[in-house]
Length: 304
Length: 43
Image 1 (spheres, rainbow over the protein chains, first blue to last red):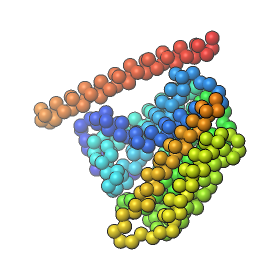
Image 2 (image 1 turned 30 degrees about the horizontal axis):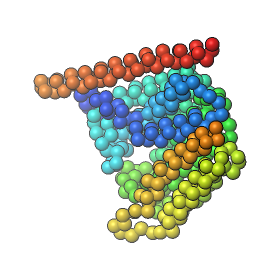
Image 3 (image 1 turned 135 degrees about the vertical axis):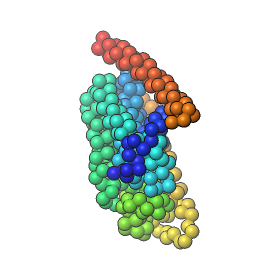
Image 4 (image 1 turned 45 degrees about the vertical axis):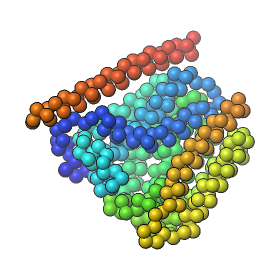
């Protein structure tokens, strides 16, 4: 929990609206919105464009709410890391209570609006994803276990399922495979990041894998998790749930991903290492997910 | 509190109120559009 320095009455200045926006982690939100939109677009039924837009808005608001609650809880940890020290709470631009109220209010609003506009299954999955991110990942796992990223990754994997459920009112094999893909993609993605911001995590006392188990184990784990991720990426095509366009994109992109993961797995970093392969994999992993989901939608449109 | 600080607080309150007004206006339009869409589907 946050220190007293970050407590409520330390800053009489009201927070700027941009600080509330920053609480929602807009950069993380873009991937969440995109995968949610793809889940919605590949669903086999039609949704009214206004309701589809509302569903995506709710996914974005839900992700923003989870991000705000995450920053509310982790204010003291964020203050210890260079990457996060300038966030509104650790920088002292906002009091913690405002962040809590904002996060809780936005959570309820997004879930209720989703239920009213689309259906209550999509709303329930959205609520589960927010609760999972805040309670299971942020409060329970992240400070306790180096497996935090593995299980916590499920929170970010919900959007394609929510998008699909908003259209169909149910959950089928394809959105579950997309869930598995994002779920298994998360560990290599974040561990690549953790390798080059290791000192930051160590200073904040977060048990990230490189801090607890060392760099060699982390490098091996990146490759190990990339293998089932590759299977999940190709599975929609192999099972006949997506066409050749997606199949070719999945095989090519996944091959590049695996090559980069293998490069990292079999190298050791020396003193003053710039960690270029790790930074490259981290950057490519974001592009990979965008392109893969984009290919799935393009494939559906081509087939249609 | 100095006049400069007071002015800064007022400026922030103004910008927050403006953003809130825009959000509320957007929600009015959104809820109207959702209602029309729901009625179109039901009809």
